[in-house]
Amino acid sequence: MSKGLAILTSGGDSAGMNPAVKCAVDYATQKGYEPYLIYDGLRGLIADRIVPASRELTTGMLHRGGTLLRSSRSPEFFDIEIRRKAYENLQRRGIEKLIVIGGDGSFRALNQFYADFGVPFAGIPATIDNDIAGTDYCLGVDTALNVIREAIDSIRDTASSFSRAFVIEVMGRHCGYLALTSALACGAEICLVPEMPYNLESIGARLKHDLANGRKYAIAVVAEGTKMGDYLTRYINDSIGMEARLTVLGHIQRGGSPTVLDRVMAYKFAVAAVDALDEGQTNSIMIFRDGNYSHLPIQEVAEAKYKLDPALLRLAAPLSS
Ligand code: F6P
Image (cartoon, rainbow, N blue to C red; front, side, top):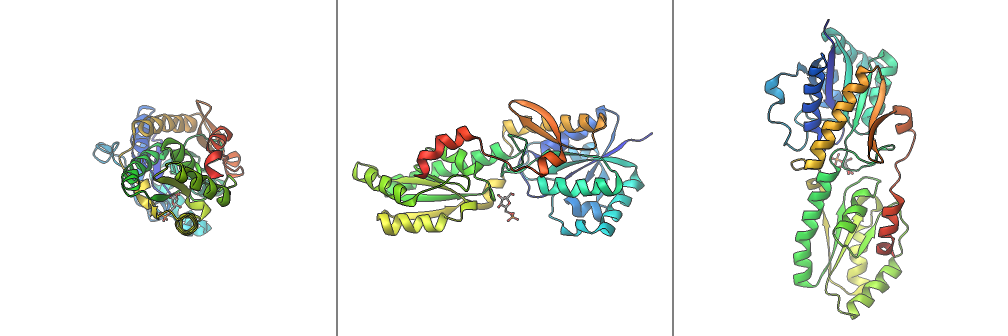
């Protein structure tokens, strides 16, 4: 009897999605499943863009950034009649289980689908924002951090050559994880994230003091969620009197070949997802917490809010005052 299991990527793409797909296909096959690929995320599930995961389709994908299955954000999935169409597409092929690689919005959508039609799913957290509750790690984060690190190292060349301040805005939506971690890793002087109070006056006084004592340039990393990039740049320029420029790194942070860490994490999450489904889990999310891999029911992930590591916040606190 065929045991169809389909894999899709959904929401913002992130490095590590491709190795997760490949590993899920290989491991599911070993476990006796018939794996399928769903193209274009939830939109493809509705539009029936579902194909058997042939060797040809999954060869040469693991080193590629983004998602070769492509992705989408699909508000139409909130319509029950549209979801019914998606269910019929699965039923026709004997697909009984799903693996969704994406963020918590995608997990919630699949949970609704499970509530409607009883199709079990396993979620693999993948977003550069690293903002999914219950897991310390989401696929794509290490690759994004390395892209940011390289960009800041390059910007530092101009900052030091021209004695300028550079404010670098990084992604993360409402979460400051990328900003906080890259500010520490890149030796920034200033860091603003939504989760940490900041005081522009004391930052300004500190900068002025440092400039009077030989500082020639400065790097500030700002999380997009603070919406402070432009303001901080003008503040440094106009109130501190130091020439300042703003660099918004943008979507460059989502791209790039997955790092070794993202590839290995992708494998571990993919194996955990297939095992969870095989053990009869119906709607669980794979997590990596305190060095261990396991899974949590979707409710615990969807209802909680991701919290930044207090130790990281303490380390970065001097950068925000
Ligand atoms: O969730 C990933 C992310 O890259 C966020 O960091 C960012 O705010 C958002 O997606 C950008 O969305 P879009 O690609 O739709 O512009």
